[in-house]
Length: 67
Image (tube, helix red, strand yellow):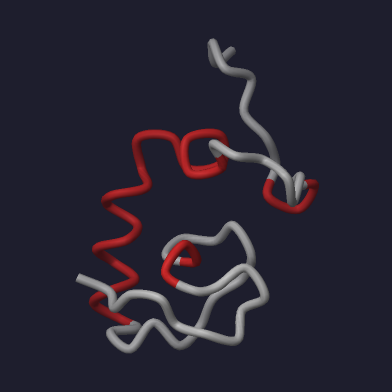
């Protein structure tokens, strides 16, 4: 059991404000590094997926590059 409860990405709440912690917990930084290695342009994303905070809410505008 996790203290914050967690969530399944397939049942995500699109209004979740702390989604990186809820869905990915301490793995977020590591997963972002892996994504940067295999998708350096940050082209592949889903809402509340690893690295999606670098895109606008509607997914049409890139707001930041991957590290």
